[in-house]
Image (cartoon, rainbow, N blue to C red; front, side):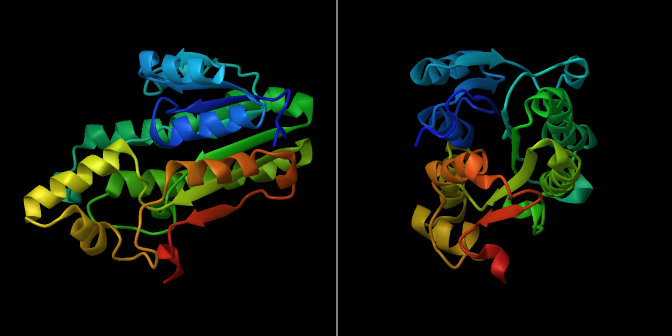
Length: 248
């Protein structure tokens, strides 16, 4: 469905996982996509595959983003990292860097993109949040804090952008089948002496009614719909894709 013909899009963390799936789906729908990632070589491979461009960028260098101006119609804030540790052992520097990557950088990219979107009278901002933007888990203090903050940023953007044809929404997946999660499953299987299927059932998916991982392409499909003209009345919302985790 080429409903994004003539539109430009930027996807952060676009070199792999959810970001790469989003870049491919937006390109399939006709958008010209910039694949932004700290791994410029990997971003280049995805960009070459979809006829887009690569942007090697370290989003932790937030100072460099303060004067940025983006001429994009669709902004997908996807870049993120995870660290698991009790609050009492959580490195303060790591906490700050995770807020910079997953809150401050999205704010600065939204700030950079809105003037162009306002001029065009069209804009779509999709923030890849998490079920942890709606629920908390132990030992993930920085990630849960950042995703909750991203939800607030998205809602304020929706309120300010509405009069200018700009929407802003969050997508909230549970555990997604990405290289990071696959490694976590293998590590936990070895640590606990159980199978990878048992890790899924007993560790990762205990709160989910549907006992499987979310596929990156499923997230990308929702992101693409929220980016389309059909979603013009959808803003300030958070779309759960967690297999029922947040229903309880």
